[in-house]
Length: 201
Image 1 (cartoon, rainbow, N blue to C red):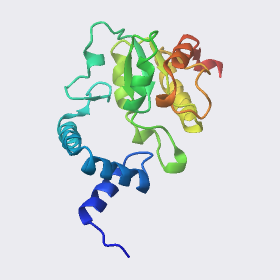
Image 2 (cartoon, rainbow, N blue to C red; image 1 turned 90 degrees about the vertical axis):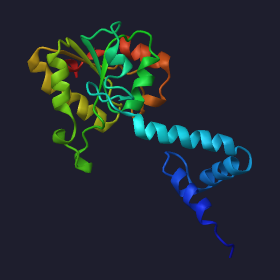
Image 3 (tube, rainbow, N blue to C red; image 1 turned 45 degrees about the vertical axis):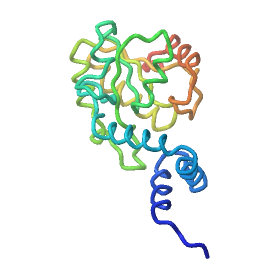
């Protein structure tokens, strides 16, 4: 039985916290950094430490930012009356690939999932209500095309429709069961252009 090196094991286990990284991939990363790119490892460590210290959630939309308002919320060029609701900050770059969208965002930080015990009280819908009160006239719901994403979309429609807000949904250019962050920009662009009213469902 080979002797273990605790510091190598600890680094490998830490890397396995990343999505899609298993023990073998983590071990390859560890050996690459320590054998071939120690300076790269130091750059990575400093950048990660800085991000952990400085990055927080935008007070208006929950996007990740290092300022009080994210650059999208702070921009005077964005259409403040057009709001896109997504599940995660990682979905925003995917929608931004679509040149047809020039509105702002609201990040739910999750989705409704009764099986996992996640109900409306567990997501920041009160913040969404505040955004609507700021003059939003249309909300395009860009939750993922999963059972939970669809349930979340219909909850948002039921919540906002009485307030006189137009609530639309991405058209089916996004594959059923697909995760938004992995969909290409042209597909999202078509889905935005062909968005439909949730009332039609």
